Each structure stands twice: as structure tokens, then as C-alpha cells.
Image 1 (cartoon, rainbow, N blue to C red):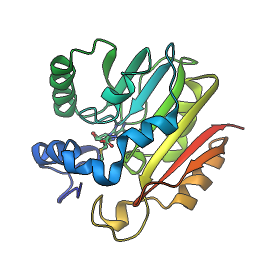
Image 2: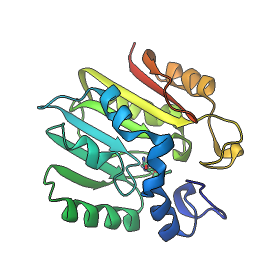
Image 3: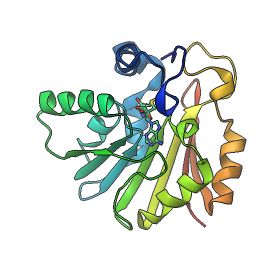
Length: 198
Ligand SMILES: C[S@@+](CC[C@H](N)C(=O)[O-])C[C@H]1O[C@@H](n2cnc3c(N)ncnc32)[C@H](O)[C@@H]1O
């Protein structure tokens, strides 16, 4: 999932078609391990999950197999169109695409059991402010999971200078009033952190 250059809107590559194709590339499963990620998220029936920066739905559609409902938020209308097509093809009726603002996902407050952010944190204009906004959408007991590329040269993912290191992310999450609740280390290229309000 090399992101390619140059960058366009929302820190996305300009060539959105290839970007979407890379996100949905079946080969991605070898390192992205979506089934293991879903198992680790431990969603339960009855829960509302929110996928922020959902892209064409790589994780959102999988979450919808267990969660009662998924809000799939993205800021790029053309990517949401690709998501809509995938929802239609899948037959799933419990995924709602949401066109968010750059600094606000436009999801309800105190609503989500799980807020999931994958490979997207570095796109937010102000990370800590965005995390504070996400925390307001958590139900009591809810969690925010952040999965992202380690800040080093890797065969996949964005250029190193766009990445946010695990420790830097955790520092910013701490500034946003979140603490580490759990961490999974089965992914070869990414950290996978679960946070809760302090
Ligand atoms: C690298 S993709 C990751 C997509 C998906 N999470 C995945 O792992 O397959 C990043 C996505 O975040 C979206 N994005 C960029 N800025 C955003 C923002 N401020 N709020 C929500 N989504 C954003 C982009 O349009 C893009 O679809």
C-alpha cells in the first residue's frame, strides 16, 4: 500500500483510483492480517463501531459482520463513492458512509463502543484536537483503537516523513486525555494501540 506521490487534498495521493486499488488489494492481507485485527477488536453484537478514515471500507465492511452498525467516515467524496459501491455489492445494510469534515467526523456524541482509526492519523490537521473530538463520541466504557505504520522505511505505507511514530502518537493521545488500555504486536509493519479516556 505504497501511497505514491504527489499529494493532493486531505494529504491523499492525487491518483485516487490507484490509491483505492492499493487499499483493497487482496495481497494486503498478508501483512495487514484483517481477520486477526478484527478478532483483537473483539466487537460484539449490539455495538456501534466507527471507522474514521474508512477509505473504501477494508475494515468497515469486516466490522459490519459483527457490530450492529458501523459509521464509516471519510473526507474524500470519491473514496466514499467507492465505499458505497462495495456496500451495495456486499449486501450489508448496517454500514452508513459519513462525509466528515477535516477536523470533525460528524458522528454523534456518546454513541460509539469502538472508534477505529487505521493508517489515517497522520492525515488529521491537528491530531490531539481530533482525538479529543473522537473521545466525545465514545459511550462510557468505549475504546479508541489506532493502527498505523511504524516510522521507518517499510515495503508498504506512506513515506517515512508522513508517518507518526508510536511513541509520538502515545504522547499526543496522552495530551488528548487518553491512556493506553491494550497493545497488540502481531502486525509486522504497524503498531496497534487501544486507548481509553483517563
Ligand atoms: C491511508 S487511507 C486508510 C483507509 C483505511 N483506514 C484502510 O486502512 O484501508 C486514509 C484515509 O483517510 C481519509 N482521510 C484523510 N483525512 C481525513 C480526515 N481528516 N478525516 C477522516 N478521514 C480522512 C482519506 O481520504 C483516506 O481514505
